Length: 421
Image 1 (cartoon, helix red, strand yellow):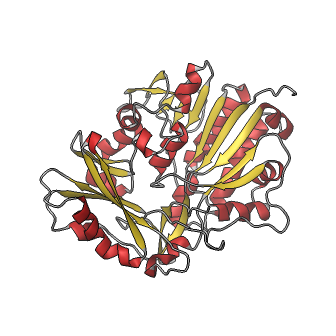
Image 2: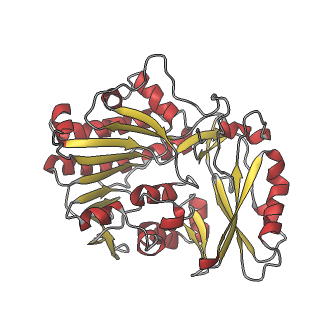
Image 3: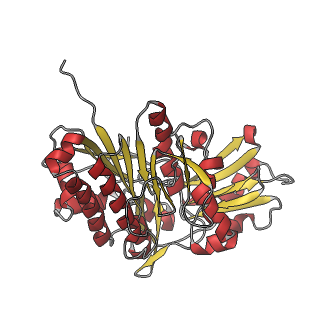
């Protein structure tokens, strides 16, 4: 067999990108760099983790495991050991309610230093243990082996991250001259900072593995709707093009690197919201934490109802609308949580929430391993879970506070993908 020389790898994560948006942009050639990778690589749809919230998804990408291993359960959750709420930033209102400084410190520092499971091994830790050089830009799950210290007053706590690590202008392992990340979020300065840093790294070929995280698309999708963020997707494409140009062009770039482009979850428009709190308003010693499309009900010490009775309260509201319930009990942590799972059954109307399963929102994946291929075979269309006979088409959970973005009078939230066997 011919010897295959391993290439360095760039993982591009476009937060919240849906297959429909990607496929449409590639077909129209609105994103030329992504179209090139799709035409000359391979494309398929993938399933996100549960629940499909950014901190959970990024922890799964970094560790290759689900929440039972990496222990990041939600965007907002109850810490039983510390007896306090953990809020990673579900909304500005939620951050203010939980305490702005505590929420920021949890997101920037504590998620990796304390919350991320000690039994989980991140890709950065594994690569450094093997003597390779990992690099990461702006990704919130970053735990590695190399100590770094923030350079902004108030954020100078030491952290362990990848060998080369850049985090929203707060933490930088190397001086790059990149512009300040937080100048104008709606104007794209977050991704502008990420692109400047990633271009600096590619110019110096300064890594074996690079995570290039672009979060502005998710922000724009919540603000304007999942099908209206075309300009931000075009900016993401330009960011990828900047890395290609920094390497000297397409041939040089692909000679040096393998490339994977993926998202962490999808988005869809939602016309009706539901809450869990009202079902437990009169139940002592229970706590509801919910955000966007997922919610958890905690049974605290002193609660007189057992797990079955708590789940029955939830089912009285949601079960008859075509939703299933999942009850989870973790004795090792003295944790009991009831979670609602919204499921679309073929041929079954799930009431007003059936719209959740009408549009697939799996993670798009574009990969360039160096072999030729097509984005889509002639006459073929990817299976959109709702069309295949007998497909279980599972829409993962949503619910909770109504603070998602608005578009044309509708609310938009992220959601997990349907499952297609």
